[in-house]
Amino acid sequence: MVQEKEVWFCNMAVSNQPEFEDRVIQIKRISKKTKGGSKFSFSALVAVGDKNGSIGVGFGKAPDVNSSIKKGISAARRNIVRIHKKDSTIAHEVRKKYKASSVLLKPAPQGSGVIAGGAIRDVVELVGIKDISAKMFGSNNKSCVVRCTVDALKLLKEVK
Image 1: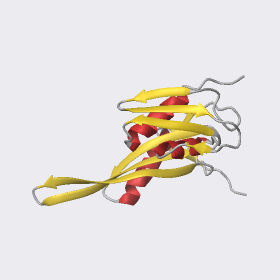
Image 2: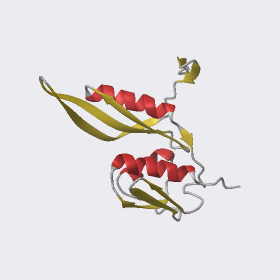
Image 3: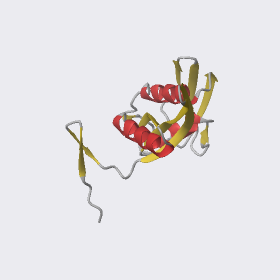
């Protein structure tokens, strides 16, 4: 039997949540010109979800890839939100715009699967939605699309 240990962060008790799955959505190499030449660092966009209605997105920057991913995971765990879903799909159609990206999420019949591309698919799978149809319009910048998708999922109303 595995015991869950409490971890203290910013004077708040945060339990270790082994049931959360993390997914790296994007890694970028960033260069900064200095007097001595180019200085490289990495940025990572990471999503964390429990496949049961919770999702968090985080962004981490560090001199190496592993550190940036760890920072992204910890930032994502701090930004977890609950999403209302109806069985294996969403309750109603949602459209959301964020900066130049726009996302349309539609409920799909049971058994149709996740019909979505790119970063939308990662976010929707981490939330635990199994049947959905999604389309992105405008910019396909991954960080904007992920933020737009999470904002759209937050707009969902609870089904009674």
